[in-house]
Amino acid sequence: MTQDITTRVLHADRLAAVEHGAVLKPLHIATAYGYQTAEELTAVFQGQQSGHIYGRQGNPTTAALETKISLMEDAVGTVCFATGMAAICSTLLALLKKGDHVVASRFLFGNTASWMNTLSQLGCEVSMVDATDAANVAAVLRPQTRLVFVETIANPRTQVADLAGIGTLCAERGLLYVVDSTMTTPHLFQPKSVGASLVVHSLSKSICGHGNALGGSVSDTGRFDWDRYPNLLPAYRKGAASGWGLLQIRKKGLRDIGATLSAEHGHRIAAGAETLALRMERACANTLALAQWLEAQPLVARVHYPGLASHPQHARSRALFRDFGALLSFESVPGVDPFEVLNALQLVIKASHLGDNRTLALPVARTIFWEMGAEQRASMEIADSLIRVSVGIEARDDLLGDFAQAFARLSLKRPA
Ligand SMILES: *Cc1c(COP(=O)(O)O)cnc(C)c1O
Image 1 (cartoon, rainbow, N blue to C red):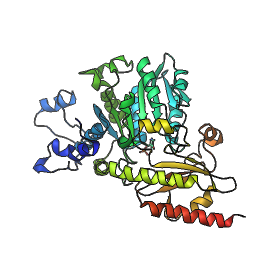
Image 2: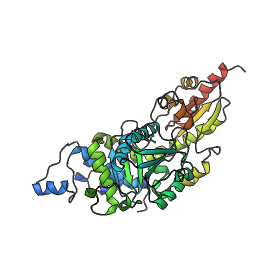
Image 3: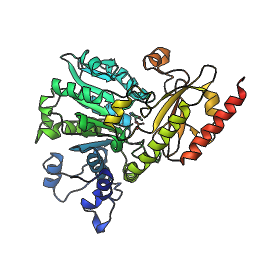
Image 4: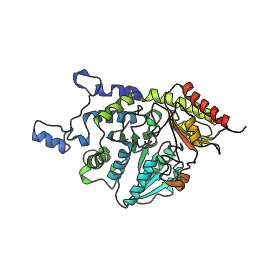
């Protein structure tokens, strides 16, 4: 199939046949699904016939979204969850056991980093390494290593993992390679192209885009040979091996843990996904313009954005991604409090969350990275003055204008 992602997503429901010729899958809110005969019900339970059983394990609306995400990632299958964190936690709980070793990037999303701490308390060992170089991953591998977990572009400092190098390493060692591609979205990057086994998304971010739904997903790219994975239970080693991993994730992760995506949220996320490419084009263009503008400001010490030539992984990003994303962060010069900068902004919303149509900003060290303490912040290269900006789709001049008026006011307050 050569169609682009937008075309595929727009026509996915219709091509799977919807009643009355509707072009969209409707909302299915039923908790239970009934069958004509006990034989049919049993066949669905035992996996010989496809069908829905109980809403905790999914519903037809969510299944339609799963199909769209699989199309976007060129994946063999997808399981959706209530949030991105639910997708990550449930997937790792479903696939790991005590004594296993995990290698993860040191620059993880804060809550994922916190979850890695929990995993280590549950009896897995976790090595957090600088994943911008695959050699750092290779250096900590051991016989017990089961998987490598990285993000594409790190939030908030925008380090870009050595995605291709780690993919080659995982392929050589037969390791499961899990890539959280929330920051890149399928519009910028398909992790399958660098050998990822599983692709994770927080659907709450750019894929939804409208800031009106929470969701998460994990997709199997078909690149991993599940026959080699030691933690799969015999019950899930049925049929083609390509389906085994996701089956265990759906049963042990989604069914047993129960962090299910609601049909309503799945429906809103699917509507957002239709315009992903349009929104990302606009947001990425805005972000580059803002990054270049900020880089020229005397009150700004450093700007972190993979689209800037000054970014350490600029060349890698250019080679791998269609564009450079809609998130940047910057540090003010000593003496300029990030609160002053934020409070001078009028259009930009002081809020957590990212990948929203509206531009949002926050002081990183005193909010999302506060709980972890100064030492871990330093290891993640989070400066006290760091401000994260998730850039939206406002008109560029309105956005730059807001920063211009804010910095003009700040400059007036400085001694000349
Ligand atoms: C937001 C985010 C998550 C968690 O997603 P939620 O939907 O908020 O639970 C995971 N990874 C990354 C990179 C994120 O930005």
